[in-house]
Image (cartoon, rainbow over all chains, first blue to last red; front, side, top):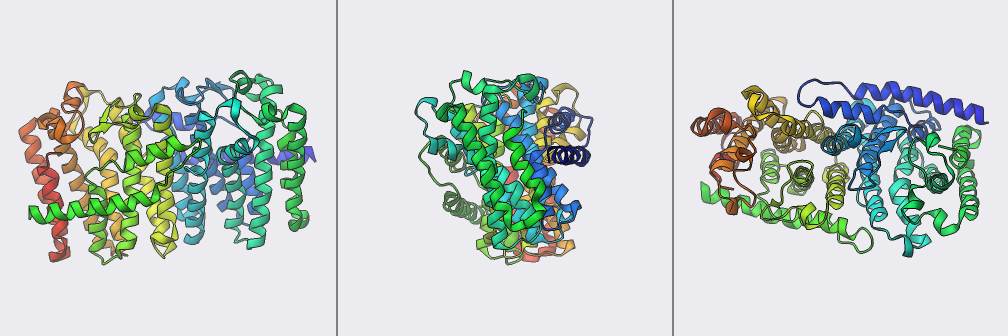
Amino acid sequence: MEVKFAKALRQTAELMERELDQYLPESSGLEQQLYEAMRYAVLSGGKRLRPFLVIQCADLFDVAREYSVRVAAALEIMHTYSLIHDDLPCMDDDDLRRGVPTVHKKFDETVAVLAGDALQALAFEILADPKTHPSAGVRASLVLKLSQAVGVRGMVGGQTMDIYANGDDISMATITRLQQLKTGALITFACEAGAILGHASPGQITAIRAFAHDLGLAFQIADDILDVEGKSDEMGKAAQKDSDAGKATFVSLLGIEKAKIHANMLSNQAISHLSCFKGSADLLQDAAIFTVKRNM
Amino acid sequence: MEVKFAKALRQTAELMERELDQYLPESSGLEQQLYEAMRYAVLSGGKRLRPFLVIQCADLFDVAREYSVRVAAALEIMHTYSLIHDDLPCMDDDDLRRGVPTVHKKFDETVAVLAGDALQALAFEILADPKTHPSAGVRASLVLKLSQAVGVRGMVGGQTMDIYANGDDISMATITRLQQLKTGALITFACEAGAILGHASPGQITAIRAFAHDLGLAFQIADDILDVEGKSDEMGKAAQKDSDAGKATFVSLLGIEKAKIHANMLSNQAISHLSCFKGSADLLQDAAIFTVKRNM
């Protein structure tokens, strides 16, 4: 299992590197730094797990790869914008991301804010482009879902909660909601986008959303466990950061052992939602297992 | 003329205040500040010239007001995000906007970055919503045009040029391109959106775009003149800011008299592009005159 999944994930990452490169031209002139920062942030590697989910979910419905790979690129570009802004001094103030200096460290804060802003716009531009799908209804639907996933009732709302959450009096319900907004909404979009591209039935969409919901939460709990147990050289970012900052996480609330049990339970539950796709969702099952077993 | 135009502009501003209010709910909980900052920035008045242009251009094609007012709201929300980020300490570092403290002064930098991010997403969410137009093709087209107008080859590119431009060796060609990207692209979208909503013919779209191009440039030159001659209490923001900063503007390059002649010429040229709409574009003509005569 692991070999097959690892290979598929690596192939997706290579595919995405080539695909993403096409949307990020170079430039001379006064905007040069902006273009460079966008390329630097987007093409700096990463697991590309979100693109993998888009493509695998689209494959369930035999969507042409030329469409799903564009949606995967839009999503990864959106995710990258959020990382750039989250790393800013006025946010999480991080110096390192994927093993290299964050954008505001490599360039400056001005460029980091602007590169993030431009990447958000670019993500929507890619989705709305007729090349992404011949049906305008599909394109408009993708834009609507992604805008909701990243807005005030999604990712940005979750990031705000995260910054203003006080570690001492945060409940399990609050942190679950926070993480569903901050990271879960984009993972749900990744999976649902495949279903939208594939004109999935309402029942299939419900199954995909349920899978994504549990996967997203498992992913976040695994992240919190990694923050405590992981090595910063393997993760490419600082470890023990949340615990040092006294931040509430699933681990601080549940303890490390219960957090692991909870993550595994969610991973199994995610897999169970895929039963309606019979044998065609093997790699998505593997993704759910990888999510809680990864060391980066 | 002026009375009729001033009344129409004021009526649009009142309409927009009610319309915009609907997209910006209040919230308690950890995201409260984010919601408050979004409302504070969007509902703090302003001329609402861009919404006025959307609605007037849509009226040329008898577009239902319920559609054009939503596009106008999306555009104003996008414009507001750009103001919030432009005012940040790492950008233009402004304390005052529309006569009140800027968002990072009233709240903090964190909230200002996040509110801008959420407003950009909200603008696209409104455009992609089926309530904005029954045709998904129209909605996808609006998203595509707006994303291009605000991205790296539009507004954000222009803002980057503006920050890295060196006042001493900037040419007339460079500042014209800079301003076309920074402010012109969004004004062009305002006018073109009306044409897209109204299924305008290619010839009509060309005329509308030419009008918007000249209007946008005239608007910016008038802004530069106001920066030198305007009073900060009338404008609601600091005056003489660009000249104090030694920034290149149309006025610093042309001198104040030539800049006024150039702005008037562009305003007249903008009006001439409307001739194909016969008598139905009176208020757009007035807008072109207002653009170079305003004192705020």
